[in-house]
Image (cartoon, rainbow, N blue to C red; front, side, top):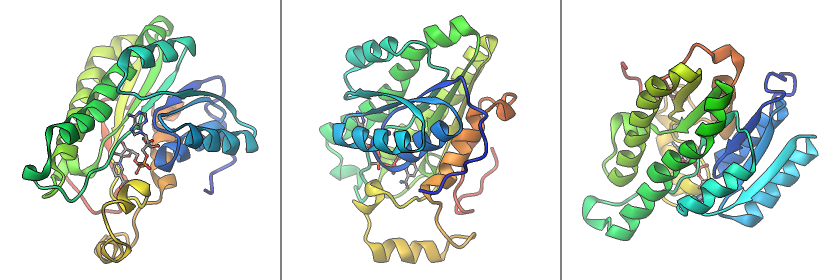
Length: 254
Ligand SMILES: NC(=O)c1ccc[n+]([C@@H]2O[C@H](COP(=O)([O-])OP(=O)(O)OC[C@H]3O[C@@H](n4cnc5c(N)ncnc54)[C@H](O)[C@@H]3O)[C@@H](O)[C@H]2O)c1
């Protein structure tokens, strides 16, 4: 993963990135660490956390780790509070589930989707708020999806969960503004990760990429740049917004 080495605008900040044991979360964690933040790497997958930890240490970053299932709300909140003050929260942990029609989505699949994305983001936010409110400063970045904006014909439980996250973003931005806590969402377009590889073949992905206006899908780092910018002082007057790096695949009015 190539990351920009020159900007150090997150020094003195502590950032929790949920689901950063692989994929885009790992890339966000690395970039935030490169920019000077102490990063709390979290995931259910311990090996993934160890790998991310190695990568961050290699670039001289500051790190601590939480290995926990985000669906276990009480335990997760306890682990987060042990970390102390969190200045930046990236609600990234997620599960995929493409290629499912409404009839193919049973209760367990539906519940996991909402427990990880919706409940997970909600209670991770609840866990960091006492510190942010005390400091009268904070930055929450929720990871949504273009499917929350334009829908999709075979992954409605995912699109619904991500739409809830957009609703959280706008509501929390209003509720938390008095404490100078900024809340925004990043809604990536299609990015090739283990999540998307599980539901589409290489051929299907390459076919789809041909129709993307900017000529290629985003790489994880393209999404991380949006996250790092929203976390930075440069974006301090941005709140309640959904920013969508998506190669021009979905262009909507907000
Ligand atoms: N890849 C895409 O095209 C795409 C597009 C739009 C949005 N997104 C979103 O971006 C985020 C990252 O996606 P990705 O493609 O990197 O996926 P990924 O599957 O590579 O990473 C998701 C991470 O979340 C972790 N996770 C899942 N369930 C968990 C749980 N119960 N507790 C703790 N950790 C858990 C996984 O172990 C994994 O490390 C997700 O929220 C996803 O919905 C992805």
